[in-house]
Length: 361
Image 1: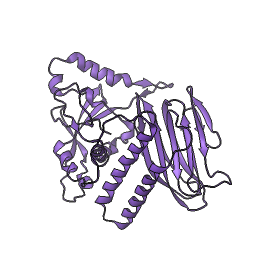
Image 2: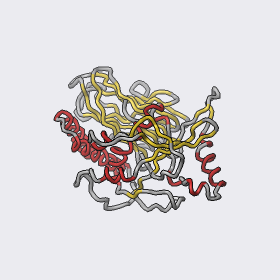
Image 3: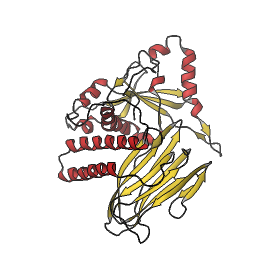
Image 4: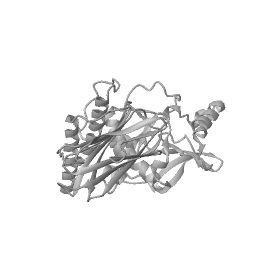
């Protein structure tokens, strides 16, 4: 979510005035999920949603002090290379561009405006009497077009939030070795999601909500012991559930659909194929999976759809969707399909050496 929070040495930061917080990976995941994300969601809610924006690499950020310190050549490179070069045109000559955003702690970075949306501190801290000021931000423009949003966060509020994380919720990081296998990467993603769910559990008083979150945590713990079936490829989309119902996994690429009716497709030289499809016929299992793998990272925007095709056990089927690459990162999503022919969907897009994955809708 936010590169402003690091879990290793900050040797690549170009600015001596650019504040960076060094947090253990588990703490960083909780801060990003439970503190940063609600603020970004609130800020971009009236701007079409955060999926219409890309995060800028904080390591390349310079402050206003440095902008006014004779570094105009770098400023031009910073603005035009990092922002303007990402502009392109479609075949019908429409301009394609996603403005960037970044979280910053430096109030001197820009002349701040005040957004109509407020910092959602009541939601974050669970306190009705918590004061919520309007979100402060700055912009970089190219003509009249906004190229970059600076979203200001008071670092004291970050510290205050970290102090609310229950003791024992996370464990100290014993090793900073890089993720080297798909299995390690997947376990890392599962543990991060479990931490978020445990925090949710600690903050709710509703019994029904506690039961729902507890069930999600149990499914995630169970996922640790399950071997994902099918090919891992360079990118894997895997669906798991625990009933004999027939769920279907679809991936819609710019070149067509991968599904049970068309189990292989080529998109710009990359082959994606459905190689596991359980509970589609008469041989039923209670721990089924469906799996789609790609032999290279597919470029462009892809839509993943989970459908409840045939009800056998339950009209409401919880599932876990795993999207991972051979690189570190990816996403694990909890969802439920309720009712025959119902569906849930999420998009992913690989751009500039990063995989952007949305939320289930």
